Structures are given as C-alpha cells and as structure tokens.
Length: 635
Image (cartoon, rainbow, N blue to C red; front, side, top):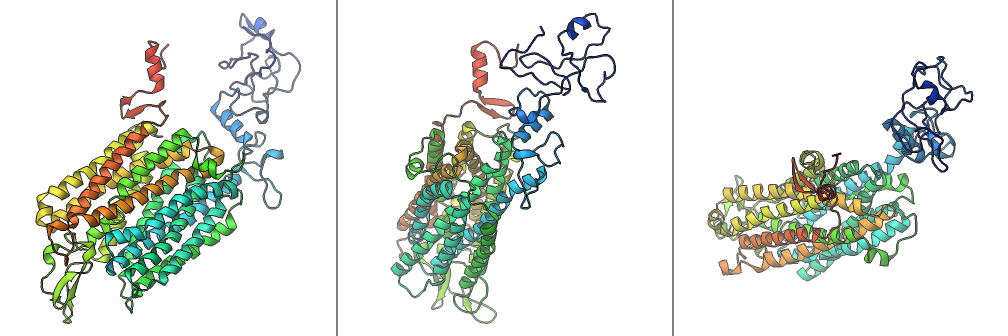
C-alpha cells in the first residue's frame, strides 16, 4: 500500500503537521507505529531514513528510535487548501496565498518577503493592519453613501410638499421626478462603465458634487413662476439629483463585493443586507428631516423651505472630504480590460440580464403607489370637510382642522384641487413621519433578513427559488389593499380611524415582505456579477432598477390623477383619491407577479428551496441521487 510518490504528485501533509505520508492521494492521518508492532519493520522500511533534526522536541515519540521525519512542505509554496486536512492549516495556507499570514511567525507577525503589504515607512504590515487597510474603503464609501442617502430622502420630501402647496397635481409632480429617474437609467449604465475604467472614487466624488448642483437650483425655485416654468426648472434640478444618487450608490453597492472573499457568500449576503438596510433607514430619517424643517416656524413664507435645503448642503459638505482623501483611484476598476459601453449595454451575463428585468418590475410594484400617490393621499383632506366654516384659534386666527385644506372667505377649501380629496388630511410633519417610518421599518428589516427570516427557513444564502417564493408573497398585501380601499365600507363612508389603521397595517406588512425581496435581489446581483467588473455589472443592474422607478412614477401619477373624477363631479374639490390609490395598488400587484414570473428564467437551480424543515424544491444533488436510487450521504 505504501510506496514512492508518482511523478507530478505532491506528498500530502496530514495532521499532525510533522508527519508526512508518502501516499500520492490524500489519505487519513497515519498514526505512528510502535517498534513492538508486528509489522513495524515493514512499515518503517518505506519511510525516509536519512538523518534530520526533525521531529521537534514536543514530538510524542522523540528519542524512541523512530526514524527522523522530514519537515512538512512550506504552505507558501502550495496553492490554497492543497493537501491540507486540518482546518487551521487550510486557513493559514489561504491567508498565506493572499499575503495575510506568515507560517513562520504566526497570524500576528509581519508577512515576510514579497507577499506582504508595506506601510508608508516601508515596514511590513501585520494581519490586523492589512485587514484594517482592506476595510478602510468600505468604511469611507459607506459613510459617504449613508450621509448622501439622508439628503436623497430629504430632498424628495421637500419637493413633494412644496409642490403640493403650490397646487401641482400628482401627474405634474410625477413629471418633476421623471428626469430624476431617467437620469438614473443612463447614469447607472455609464457609471458602471466609468467605475470599471476610472474607479469608485471618481464616481463617488462626481455623485456628491452633482447633489450640490441640484440643491443649488432648488434654492432658486420661485413660487411666483407659472406652473410650466416651475415644472421645467424643478425637473432639471431633480435630474442632477438623480445623477448624483446613482453615481453615489454605485460605490456603496460594489465595495461590498470587493472586500468579501469569494468563498464567504454568507458573509457577503449579510454585509449587503446590512448596508442596504441601514441606507434605507437613513433615507427614512431624511424624509422626516425634510418634512420637519419645512414645518419649522422660521420667519418668512419660505423660511422652512430654505432651512431644509441648508441642512442638506451641510450633510454633503461633511461627506466629500472622506472620499477625496481616503480612497485609491483604482478601487473597483476592471483588471483584465476596460469596460466598454457595448459590453455594459449588451451584457452576456444571462442571470444578470433576467435578474435586472425582474428588478424593474419589482421596484415598479412599490413605486406604482408609494412615491407620489401615497404622499398625496395622506395629504388630501376629507371631502366632507370641504365647504365647512373655518375654526378659530385662541388668538382669533381662522384655520381648518384638516391638513391639505385652507381657510378662504370663512370656508375650508382644498389647498390643492389637483391633489383630490377623500384622503387622510394629515399635516406635513405627519406625512413625513408616516413615510419615514415605512422606510425605516423597511430598512431595518433588510438588515435583519439574513438572521431573522431566511436563516430560520434555511434559505440563506438565497437563490432564485427563494426570490420566486417571496416574489409571490410580495403581491399579496397590495392585492388586499386594492380590494379593501375600493370596496371596503369604512373607505366608502370615510371613517378616518379605520382608514388610517388599514393603511398602516397593510403598508407595514408590504414593507416587511418587500424588504425580504429587495435584500435577496441586492445579494443576487453581487453574487451574479463578474468579479473583476463588478462596478459595470452592478451599474447595468441598477439601470433596470431606475427604469422600474421611472415607469412606476409616471404610471402612478397618471392613474392617481386620472380616475375618480366621476364620483363628485365637482371641480372645486378634486377627484376621489380612494379610487386613485386603489388602482395604483392593483397595478403594483400585477407588476410584482411579473417580477416573480421572470425570475423563473434565471439559471440557478442547484441549491433548490428549503421551507424550514420541508423541501419545497429539491436541489439538483438530491434529484440526481434519486435518479440513481440513492440519496447524498448514503453509501
């Protein structure tokens, strides 16, 4: 059984490390044979007999007459995991191949020779220092990305509330955001190419700078302009904010792939989920900050508006220095060759293409009712409250008790006829709080998805089957809301408390389920992306995300503003917003189902689908085992 090692094979190191077998193929550890063993002489005849200082003093049989054993192969000369049976040895060999570990001095020592990184003074870095250096881009990009995200949510709330007060309709507000989303389509495409060619630092700094341009233009929005002038001006300003958002987001999404080893897919899923969830939570904080600043008692008609913009300028100023001085120019660039526009537009990655198409309809399923219709619905006053006499404060000032209405000639009238009536009539702070809580809950759920939802169900890290299951579940809340809002008696009779509770519960359930879907998608795109062109791949994917938002925003504005007029036949109070938002919920349901159906085309069938202890879709390994009449693990 024992013999010389055939040519071309490496002797296999076994555990413990000082004993080396001469078998050509990996074998279980061979225990030393005492000299008294009946076959000791024959076994020893196959062992090296040349003198050596090995074994070390702690060898159990040192000094017993055993022939000296040669030292084990140097792990630095072996490929990761080659011939290593002990987990610690495999880990050290992998670390050595990356220049992170020195077998001679241990994990805390500096790495000798060419494999190690060096500090600014030429000294070699310890493993901890190298890890810290590798994580520094992640920390800087995440910090800049998260600070920017606050401004992104805040600016969206500022434009929505200010446009509502200036009597813009839902469709006109949707048009204001159309270049914001359209810019995202092209920016994601071009940013992916730019990131692959010039690096993440380039795209991040340009993104933050464009947000300055957008904020500066909003300072110049003059309420005395006509609707057409204001519409064109704000649409262009939002275009710069849209470019800024997607340039900045590119770095936040791709850096997770760059700092996570290929074999750490579970860790990658958790990292992507955490940064995505925390980002969305901070976007919710931005919604609240924007609404609160708009309602602040600042002197002047536009005092709150200018305060809100000024806070956002400060946050951008705080984000830029970190990115400017702390990032390398080649971070995120393609190593093999520069990406081209043709490669980005016509991706040959089958899974990424269809995942991108599914992403389009997934995010349209939310934006078909969330971005414009929901804020208008929350702000629109009850129809029965319009035309009633105004009330007076203790100081004798007339006012109307419902948000979205104003006192004109002693009567409460709709502040924005184009915004309709029949909604909840909340004031601006409560509208911002409602939207902020949705986004915060959604974001926190994203961060908790790996350990709270998918791990107990044995669906982590996820694959296409996991997304198909949750895509189907995602369509249920909006389907129920469509039926309840359109046909529910408390919505028809206008009972405020029942309507508010229904909307809170239904939207909260959707937020939790949508967070699971979004988290799965955010992981799958990084998983399917080409490792050395991750910026290009993620940019292509989020281009489709922007198309979905654009489609959802424009279609939702048309639906919300176009239906429900026949209910009142009164142009002075507007359309019935209950009908408008109900059909927006229905459109979201259809879009969610389309996203689920498209996911079936993705080629990712190996792992199957577990539903806790049940197997919902058998894995490829199990199916092959059944075809052979045996299961994996059976002899």
